[in-house]
Length: 137
Image (cartoon, rainbow, N blue to C red; front, side):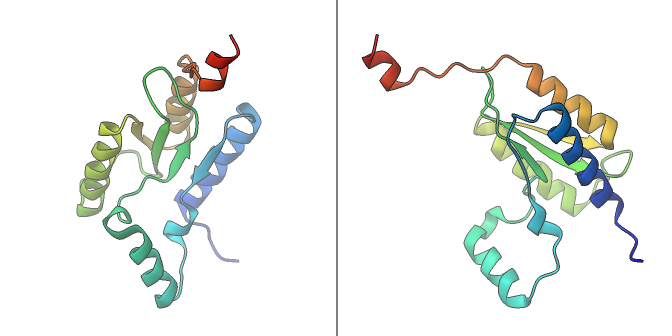
């Protein structure tokens, strides 16, 4: 039997946590990032995303708050974030997302991921005034 990578196990645990504890909150994993694909598919993916391909966070929680448009989480199966070219690219990408109004966090292990996500979801939701709400008042 093929041994699963530690980050795959972490993604599965975080997904189960979201589905059981926050079932009405939409979320998405960048599942394709770790997939082995053909050269053609990899080339197409790079062409579609351009410079925005490398460093994209692992998870997005589609829940706006008063201060943020959503939460991006970079999951790490390690106890700390290792300083490497890869993580420097991730940090640079994260700063771009923060500048666009998103919260972006690294989470090392399941417990930290759970704390980051639960803390974010505890923030008050943003009430969006819609044009149709204004017209019907």
